[in-house]
Image (cartoon, rainbow, N blue to C red; front, side, top):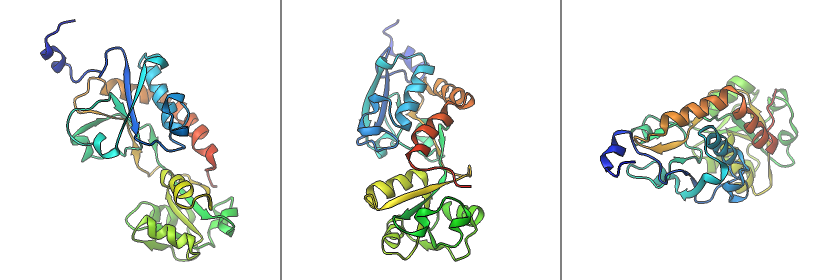
Length: 254
């Protein structure tokens, strides 16, 4: 290869390290996205997706190098120390002005979180949720999802922030909270500290789309999108979502 730097520029920004695929995730990576804060294990939904994409691109597992970034640094303008980054980045037009995105590897669903020991926590169907008091955060897609997919018999309680909604759940002002699935895991594991249950997911495809973040002008962007698309078409992404997300106590409610 030529040592002339301008050659590389013409083809876009190449890999951080030749022959390796450098993938970033959060400074602390949470379950069920990454199990045990150890993405190199390949366990957890995003860790598993990362290795599946690496394989599609022709990289052996041992040629995947993990680095950590903050969420904000990853989507800020400027040079990056990674080829790909995944930590539940929603694809938005605003972000796409400063970084490149792959096609989506996951579309978020809405999920119902209840306080342990409540009737809502025992619900196994949509019908059983129609008589409970449900809460949502204002300005989210959750309200529309509740009204369309659950159609409760009591008014949905709307809160300014997720924290206010969680406090209402803890204080018994609402029986259950509807949030996107990634937030549901966070509410259950970090905020309710074991006193919460994910009742299940609502089956609708109106959620945020998560994509890999790549440096703006990355030469890998088209290849990564092709890899994600191939995994989606073969059903691999759905299998991984079922394995790592639904099996984590988030079945689909009918």
